[in-house]
Image: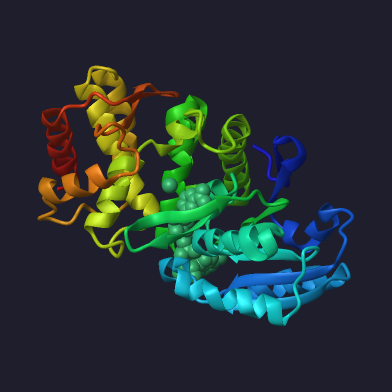
Length: 367
Ligand SMILES: NC(=O)c1ccc[n+]([C@@H]2O[C@H](COP(=O)([O-])OP(=O)(O)OC[C@H]3O[C@@H](n4cnc5c(N)ncnc54)[C@H](O)[C@@H]3O)[C@@H](O)[C@H]2O)c1
Ligand SMILES: [Zn+2]
């Protein structure tokens, strides 16, 4: 594997854009913005990121940009309407106009919230995503899904608004906790499970090196995951054709687990890891996935260090959240299952008995 910087193109006709990835890409990326009408940058940043903010500002200023920065507390709370409303006023005060560019520097919550502001401010201005968590670099930064939460559920208010560029600086990952890295790794391994055997095996083999942000291993792995995401997004930009559905592998149960534990116990990727183990169990119970494949894949996932499902997590509670899942169609729950490593299938005929059986298996694996 080589450790140089890499690119991924998202082919969406007039809305096509690139993601650049590597060590040091933050210092030179402004040249990739090409000819812009106005070099006025409005940065929405995670206020905790001291070095990343400095490097972004320096890079833009060096390229002749006028910089305005709005540091915000990152986290799920930012994705609430009352938290982002002041930002519109701040942009108006600073005279951001339709030719201005918004830069989102932070993890997925900053990207989702700032992307949504870019989608709606003056009916939409261009934006650049600079994801700083592994989870955001491999997943949320690509695809144009922007949005905020509602008391009724996560991501219920939003818009599709593609960025004009995504910059994945792997230097930024060096300040992430091991937990955050594992959470991102779990989301990356999903691409291996549903699309790409080789990617799955590479991640399993190099797990420790990826978690420790070893450039030589992390760049090719993020690149591969991003390439898959770009391909799927290009086929189904607005998530209406079902092409993007496989990306939900592990998410039906994962989201229910996050909700059942008050969004305070698991990192997203950790809950997805349990969700994938649940989906694998279900795939085997539904006789879609052979026992041998199930044991092979689940055995590898069991070695990824995530917190256990809290004792006392009852099926009834999860069931309530599962049925609230937005993928409920015609009152039927919709699961993404696995046929074999690299091939996902959807299934809306899973009985509750089968669901409970899979839950029991996962709970046993969690003890
Ligand atoms: N739009 C999409 O397609 C999509 C896809 C998946 C997830 N998401 C969203 O992403 C969000 C989760 O993303 P996240 O896990 O990145 O959350 P986050 O933005 O809350 O970041 C997690 C934590 O890491 C910190 N942090 C960020 N970068 C850091 C760095 N370089 N070093 C040290 N600490 C750093 C943040 O301050 C925060 O405390 C959720 O809201 C989820 O809904 C969106
Ligand atoms: Zn996810």
